Amino acid sequence: YNIINDYSKNDDRIKVYKKENGGISSTRNFGALKATGKYIAFIDNDDEYKENLLSDNILLLEKYDADIVKFNKTKVSIGDKNKSYTTSKTDFSIEFLEDEEIWKNFDKINKFGGTIWNAIYKRSFLEENSIKFDETSRNVIEDHEFNLECYKHVKKMVINPQSYYLWNMRTEHSTTGKFIQERFENIKIEGNKLYLFLQEKQIDKYIP
Image (cartoon, rainbow, N blue to C red; front, top):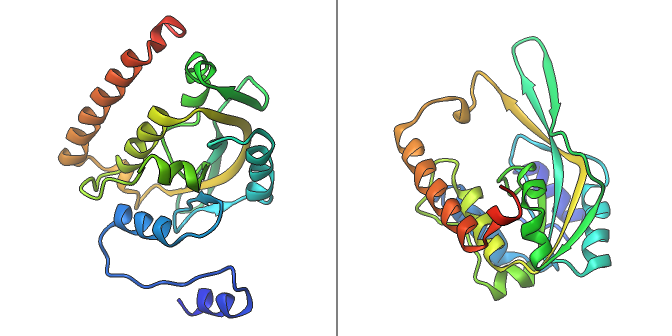
């Protein structure tokens, strides 16, 4: 807290807020509500942005007047004595997708996963469509639900295959590596929502 407070004293773009702990979804909603910039991006507390993540991808948002840009990530598996790096494989260049082209290329979008921290969102797009995190979901599903709501409304999207985000996973402490029954049930529910969405958009006629 002291470190970020010191930064805020030297840079008036940085705002520091304190709130009662209501879970990650509550905190993200709180941050989005307080935001005043044109775009919204997320980062988890133990991860890292690579250089130029914001500048490169906001340039793409501005160029195409897009609602969302999705970019690649690198998973950093951190053990007791070493690190290993895995970047999602892609076979395409930067692409601008609009309307039906989004669904024709949904397999490319899906390669980036359902996370929200390897994306930047236009704030007005989120506000106009009342897109928020479900504060009742607490088991690693909130990212997927948020993105599914975005996909229901998105008109213009950019996908950038370059990796800009370091997803640091400490294997001995990660909650994603542990079986939790409630999370498993939530994943099934979310899978059904995604299935219905894919049917609604008739994505299987583009991607068998």
